[in-house]
Amino acid sequence: MFYIKLNLMLLLFTVALISCSQTPTLKNNEQNLNDSNMIHKTDAEWKAQLSNEQYYVLREKGTERPFTGALLMNKEKGVYKCAGCGAELFTDNMKFDSHCGWPSFDKEIAGGKITQTTDRSHGMVRTEITCTKCGGHLGHIFDDGPTETGKRYCVNSISLEFVPANKISESNVTNTIDSIVLGGGCFWCTEAIYEMLDGVISVESGYSGGNIKKPSYRDVCTGNTNHAEVVKIVFDNTKTNLDEIFKVFFATHNPTTLNQQGADRGSQYRSVIFYANEKQKEIATSLISELNKNVYDNKIVTTLEPFSQFYKAEDYHQNYYSSNTEKPYCKSVITPKIEKFEKLFKDRLKKK
Image: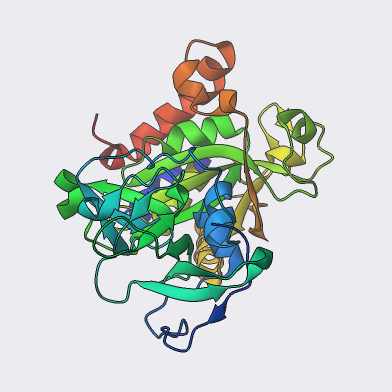
């Protein structure tokens, strides 16, 4: 009776879903960062959206090690965007090899997309460059460029997203990317399911909610760190949305058992939603209330906890199911969940 009620409710719910740290001061002739068009997010929202490395550079004004950036030697035709907000900053014909260890550009795309501020850190006077739209740290600009502009925009690779020329037309929609961190028991199961949902861009297994930094799998398995096994889901909200992601979440694990999913027991296996903002919390709260009223005989015990930090799990945990489909745990626990997901959300599967 429980699953009949759940399936009916899901049918009603599911709808067609067509370089260095510094404290800068603003120059007199520089653009004011408190622009009405600027993106304002809480620290928790940025941490949920960005990887740990991106957060360190973009939000904490860190610097990636020289000669390590993925875009350093990139020579493809295309556009370089801010990795934090998608604002277009540079094009391929502005890039040159400066042999300094970071991607370099001799000019920026017009329109005030980059803000310059005076940086007096480390006993030097330099000019920091940040994305005007989101305030993300990009790097520094110098007056030693070899081209006619005389400028060298020295930029961290990790601050940028490169869009090849043949895909530019597909990426004109801005601010369509969002993310959420969820725990539904073993992260191998949750990851495998969401990797199949249309609109999901990426899924990473990891740990959140605990009281130690950079925990290992062994640490979390003790149940003493208060971390939960979670997945970080990055999705395109023009193809899916939080409402659907939460419905998949509640349909593919048991949210009524406290600190337990099947044989997996402990607080690390708790059912939990780590919300990055009040909107995420509000959507989750509303759905839980509806499910408690119309679907579940036992009360949902899923906790709603404010997001603070996501720690990516060890490499061997990533894409675990796809690499280990014949192992006993995968066959007996994960495969049945996937089959259930495919049945309930058959019209929402990614095209192979």
